[in-house]
Length: 212
Image (cartoon, rainbow, N blue to C red; front, side, top):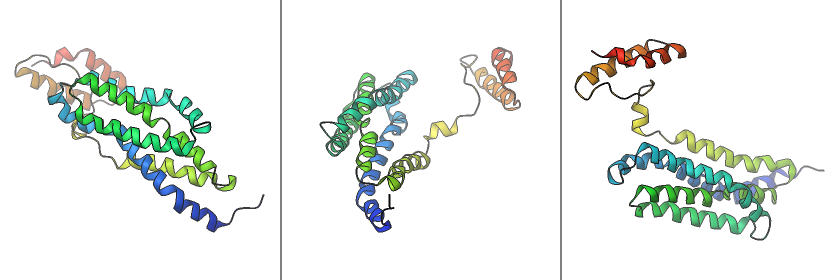
């Protein structure tokens, strides 16, 4: 099979990849923006760490589960073009609905719904590109989506609270008075001075000894 003209491949790049890449970049950003919103949700919705973890996990759970039926819809009756448009509209509506949430349960439900809505984008985009690109250049088109996801994850800064956390295991403060502060400092210093995982576990098991 003869290789396709390079100018044809470049034309496909210009016509297909920009819109698909921008759409996928926005969807990838929607998956990580909850960590930034949590800083304000802690006060307004009383969002605990357990609920935050549940909401984050529900998105990826339903995103993974719905990949197969979304692929089936893309390759049969609906087609990739209609499914891509539906995914963008529904995902945008789900993200915008987060502004109306007034309970922690609503956050979990909407994140699960967002995972369902986003599940069809990547398989539909790959199937759509395979219909246009010849076999010799198929990887060039699909790789742009992978680069978009990696670039989004790399350029999205972490929330301030995750940057400021010390790299030591968390544990409840020893007491409710001022001695808890000195206990925490002594424990952190002990953990920072050790590099062995077994030593860290031993210190954690005997953390009560760091009372002052």
